[in-house]
Amino acid sequence: MMRGNINLGKVIGIPLRLHYTWFIIFVLLTFSLVFYPLGGPPYPPIEQRILLGVLTSLLFFASIITHELAHSILAIRNNIPVKEITLFVFGGISQITKEATHPRAEFSIAIVGPLTSLALAGIFYGLYLLLAGIQQILAASLMQWLARINVILAVFNLIPGFPLDGGRILRALVWYRIHDYHRATRIATKVGQGIAYAFIAGGIAIIFAPRLLWFNGLWFILIGWFLRDAARASYQQVLLRDVLIGITVRQVTDYGCPLIPPDMHLRDVAEQYILPTGRSCFPVTRGAELEGMVTLQQIKKIPRTSWATTSVQDIMTPASKLKTVHVDQDVLSVLQEMEGENIKHIPVIEAGKVVGMINREELIRFLRTRADLGVRHTSG
Image (cartoon, rainbow, N blue to C red; front, top):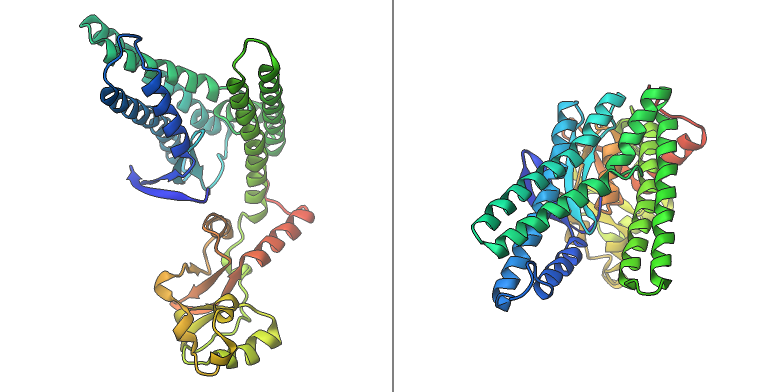
């Protein structure tokens, strides 16, 4: 999950989020459409150009959402839950909670995105012909641009570099041929990284080539950099799923974590719990019912001279603002949530009572240990 997301609501039950980097491409795209208008001279007034620029940019991103929804719908039909769709600087991404279990499912989920973009291109081109026929030149130019950009979107996504749609199609085909999901993923990842380095090299060549726009070269380098990092991250995500699949919160919970009463003073917390154990985060409970959580960082903000008179409940984070997990939840989804929202500790609940804590650093160490021992789930 990307950090820095804005929640836009839900589409067919799937959360739609906007990463802050989306505003970069939105501003650049709108700016270019305002100052380099579609359709050529004579240009309309600046107010109309701004309106058309914003409208075109929004329709473009609506096309991206439609592209991602197509992936999501096929994934759900193949019993693969979709956690969310996020728009960011390079387009959109559907975050699924598990991988396809068969190459045919992988192929269909991957191919439907580019096919949807091509279908949208056909619709926009039909509208272009209709509007051009009735002399609505500016609106026709807008539709023509949207048709072209959807074709470009489809072609770009068909590049056989994992994790692009084309890379997933390649993985599905290799997986179908060799019957080894992990080896197919490695092959698709290597191809993706090779294509990424080709983009970077091409971008450098464009920058130093005569009579070519150096700015285009920067875009090639940026895209290549993104593809390289995305290929690595996607492969690591596959390994992560395999290492943690079947592991529940119960197996990684710290059951020895002390439960602190809300009326305990900070001096007592420091002397009885922090100094002897070295722990830095504690659930605050009344009985076994969660009241909140207190951390070493919160305590350090209070002057030592006030520790004897300041109680835990005065500084704790209340339960209403805390994430909690159940002992039977799968660890993978919990770790993804902790990473995505930068959460270091989460209280663990069983039968409505606090039974322990999950520490992100300890969870990552657990993950690395299993990876070092070669423990992983096997799939066909």
